[in-house]
Image 1 (cartoon, rainbow, N blue to C red):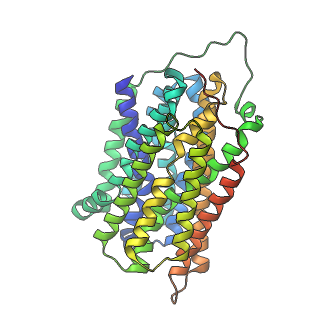
Image 2: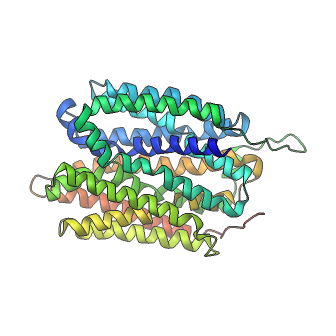
Length: 395
């Protein structure tokens, strides 16, 4: 089981890499394939949307056949296949299709680990295990920053992506070999419960609504907008962009690791989640108010968005505390659906906002609209979350 979790974390490193690497590849894709920020925002959004669309079938598969086959098969076909298609892409449509395939491939990885944690470990340590796994996996964010920049300089963006396709396939094979399925829950009588059973629970909806907006600022900005923002507004070098994305990526790792064990120190998950997301929203609002005053201030605020916007695992832990054991797979993937789906929708919308508000005379205005957009949505989610019930930890 320990080796299985390790290889699932390796798979999640790739998942994090693929959702963020467009920020670094953007200048090369603009030049080689004549893409635009709006097209790349759409491609990034498609990754999130296909990832989200897969959560319901992935949840059923986790409960029915377990994480071993679910994760290895999808990562091999979708993840490796999509990366190979991206490496040979000749058009914008092929990039969008490749990102959709990669989203499908990455869709079961983190939830497979969370399913194992929820079924094989005490609820008291779920958030800690989930947060540490999320934090370690977020090293993919780091790999998609300065290391990817160097790899592209050495091998070109196509060579770098082809190498990643091979690595992705090898990780899928390791998942198949080492991941072990937890024992199934045995029910006294036949159950017709489904994901609809969870959706009919009023207690889960404030958590779902915050989940739909919590990941969008960090994922959207780190995944795409940080690179063109720093390039257009501050006219910095590729090396500086790589360094800034690295800083934001490391901040997301630290945030995930810090959030995880907090519920063992502060008894209220609700307090932890609300305060963290409120501070993330405030960081976005400050970026809106002072978009071009100082490069260092902007990088600091971007790092704060990454740090405070990493409450993903704790929110899933909060929701998981109300989900019946035999619906664990469908429960955690439902929450993930709203988290990733919300990020995908808001990311695609952010591209349209940028086109509508940016001008040659004031390019910063387009980025201001994006920061305000993410910040206001997150504030609205925080308000709804105030009506949630604090978690009931089960032994």
